[in-house]
Image 1: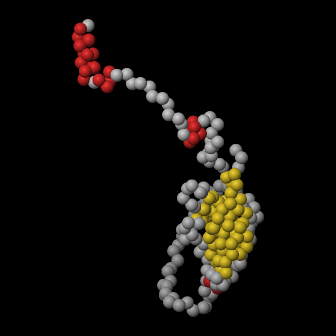
Image 2: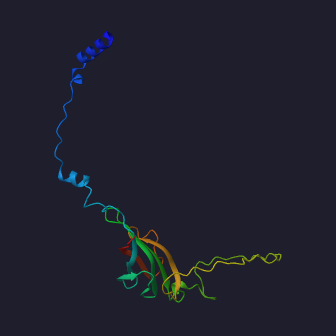
Image 3: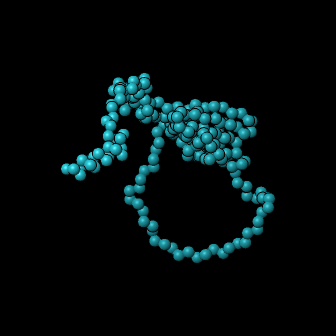
Length: 206
């Protein structure tokens, strides 16, 4: 017992602060922000929760390269807007919230009703001289042995039909366009140019 008493006395001498009892301090008053954050009835509860949104319409800018005329088109989802010979049909779009890096994307289908009727779309006619024509030697035809009938699929999947009206022109573009980088996946057309400006969405009740 004396050994334990000596050890306790030595500890008290070496660490006097540890031997003293720490008096409990009075609680400091909470700030307004702390009280709101600790309250069960938090008025900001759920403000950070993400909301499900669905696309409503897409705003595009269409440019005629020949006349330098451009127009802003606001097109509802799956509807068709016409600009010159183009028929533009948006399928979906997305827009990031303000607190994130700004970006607007849209999936578009673009059709051309005059594709093949312009001189830039036509190949040289037979008999017309072609500049820098390269002489091509005739290659004799190779004998090809007939092959039996190829296997066919009995249940071929039906082609996917998207919602909305169907355009009459030739599909010349189908893909995503990005507002921050219009040249990333641009429309390649000799007369017209189209790029994304904005996307309107609405919240969906879960």
